Amino acid sequence: MSLYIFLKSIVQRLSLKFKLFVLLILISIIPISLVSYSSEFFMFRSSTEYSASISSQYVEFVSKELSDYLQTLNESFDGLFINASFHNFLDTPADQLTEQANEMMRFRPLVRNSLQFHPEVLGVLYVDLIGKVYFDSYQKQLNPAYSLAADHPYKASFASSKPELTAPHLLPYILYSKANVFSYIRPILDTDTGRTEALFIIEIHEEKIKSMLSSNQKDKEGQVILYREQDDTTVSETPLTAGLMQDFQQASLEASGASKQLLFTSSGREYQAIYDDLPGSKWKIVWMAPLSSINKGVRQTYQLTLLIAALSLVIALIIAFPVMSGILRPLYRLKKGMQSLGRGVYVPVPMKHHYDEIGFLIHSYNQTLDKLQFMEREVYQANMKEKERELLQLQAQINPHFLFNTLETIESYAVRNNGEAVGDMVQSVSRMMRYTIRSDDGWATLKEEMAYIRNFLKIHYYRNGKDVHAHFEIAPELLDFPVMKLSIQPYIENAIKYGWSPYMGTDEFQLTVKVRAQADAMTIVICDTGTGISADVLDRLRQLIQEKGATKDPYFRKHTGIFNTFRRFILVYGEQVRFHVESTPERGTKFEFQIPYEHQNRGPA
Image (cartoon, rainbow, N blue to C red; front, side, top):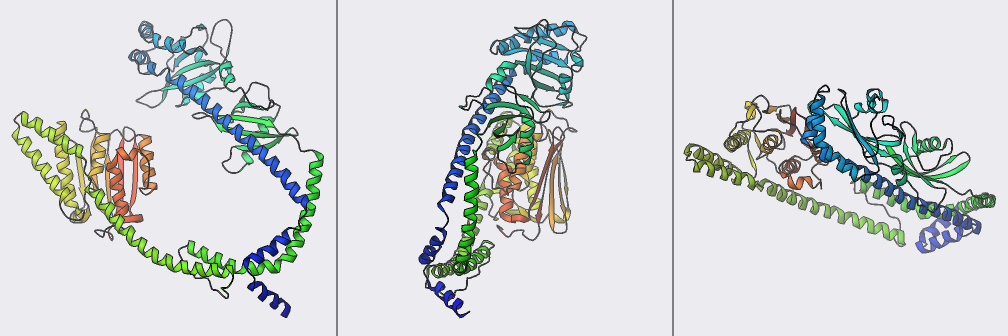
């Protein structure tokens, strides 16, 4: 026992350099065979990773090339979809054959022009639910006796609202020689119901898509495959081994993580597979090739090396354990101290000895804790000042376009000698400007904010010549409650800008502002019955809420009103403010947010 205590005291006094030297001697007893095995292993892995890197780039290239081709092909017919004659054709009943023929003769040059620049397209087909059919091609003729209504692939596509690329199939509705094609189906939606009422089908020669899958890899056994998982459809230049894609699918299901490369075994052979999604479709681009089998000698060397390495490791651990425990114990204390620091708790590490490198490190760490505490106080004070500066800057912003447009409106009424309207607008603008620039640290009562909104709606009435039906439901006890200036008005302006139109009737667009009191917060709701927000903008707004205003989306560089207001709420109320936005096309938009009572008029959180 006394010998152990003596050795322990000696180890504690050794320098870190000498301790590492002892550890290096212990590790050096591992046989050279382990190094040999490691070299073989890393060479194999390096080769595999290099192959995977090259193949990944090629798969991405094929995926992008095919995606760009489909997009270009799709865009080449965009002129047809905005053509008035084509839209008249869509609305023409099925029994009015003369009107259909007249409209087809008008938009047919657009179709022919696109077909001329895409010789790989066998033809285009239009079908709809009421039985109208239009086919155009430089290469084939439509079989008038064929019933497209009974064709299952096309019939099933009416349930989809997105463009899709079908599996290769025989084209049954043409005369004379048949052809294998890929069908690129573009649904035509009814703007009133949102349902697919017709299909515009581009028939692409099968050889065109297959030629884009041609592999230029040096590995002759490698091949590129177009694969659709939902029905196990595969497209490749050469036939595939039976069960190969089933084994690939099983391996991809078992693989963890987001990696799109894997190794798997099929029919006794080991394969490497790299895959990527074809954007905008349910297809995958897969490159796979068999790996060379490791020879018998390498496997025997691996087994022998593993045995020697295990024995050497056991011996090294037995010898090194007393030494390593002395080295690692103070490091474990330091580790716990750093973990506490990561949680924001400053716990100094106790020291028994400080004359070796680890002791010096712990001593420096404890000194660093003291400096961090001091710096944390300074950073906190600096952040408070920065938040106050940012809040004042956001509050000071005003949209000059509103002022310019209002002045132009005043000028137009002045030219018409409408003095009453000019006076009314000047008074409204005066009250609004006085409200925005007065020195009140950016706070006002709810009553004053609502008065600003009413002046804004009055200016909007004179500018557009039509009133907006607005309804206010304000809890009386909250009228004198302090709120941030211009915290509600941007949502009113946004609702009118994107949801209202001068052509709308009074019943079509109604704007409602509700402010009600709750137990610990004030709830503000701004809703309208306008056209709604697009799905893209709605996603951006929800992402802004989720990221607490810390977004770099360039969209908000041009649309600063809602962003500035939201950022001000975050600066003032911090995590306690709650936002919610929802919107339905043609039914309106709803903004709802809650602000706590206890932080009113206290500055940044």
